[in-house]
Length: 381
Image (cartoon, rainbow, N blue to C red; front, top):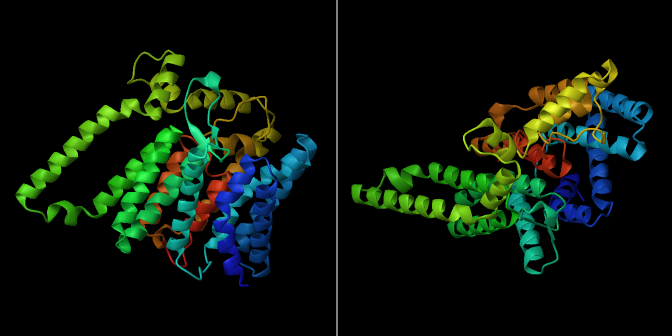
């Protein structure tokens, strides 16, 4: 079997690997670890991107030694920490010249439908789990996935690619069906990220078809379309307060006793779920560490301080200044923005926005693998 088909099988197994993580089985970390080792070995043997790869691997080795011997995290945690750091950059390097033996868009579509199918199946059969503790007061269903944030990020990332692909194939009923299922998932999860991502994908798709749907119409047709849009907006304003997303936001607002909606306090406590407070706490903790910890980080498994859950800052504080420079330096020199088409750029931008709001993207292999895949430049999505 060609290695390309093994890669496709691995990508299609992604949703099922995430289910094994939910079940506390070590299969996901093992399979993804084998994948990372295999593509790293492939790059070395084929002498591809070595000038970029070697600094990553050297930092990985140094960071492992540092965390195991200096921070005393244990071998399992030390390996896992480096694994998360290397996963996205090396995936991008590998997929940069990877040639898919079949339509890449078709593979992405299957992956998205698998995630949605597993999620909704777990809801219908009542075999999934709630995303929040009963004591939290908030409501949300995470199904058979460990992280509701990672599940939301994956759907938001893949949705623009799949809808554009279905549009090109003129499968308009499938697009409508896909959006209905995605909206249902959003109503169940109760996350701001998924609801916002779906709305953005709908607006982006309609914007692509603006000439056909609006500008080429007669005056009376345009008035009718504007009337429909107005009705939809009014209905949306009426229905949004009934969603879990809105109700969870109100619970946050009441819990933190936020009085003003237009305020930094509202943005921090309600929109960012107090992450800006975590950012300040991490900064204060980080700047008081010794020079070694400032350069190499305080480690992901440092339980003295809660992670910010904004990926850029978590990489800085947990992997240090050197790790931050290497990680984003590699991304900067590796990503060829000109060779990535418009739809893929939208997905990439959405993921980076998510990494700046709810996190769980850049150093989370379940999500970052699809970011690396979308950045594939041999046949841009």
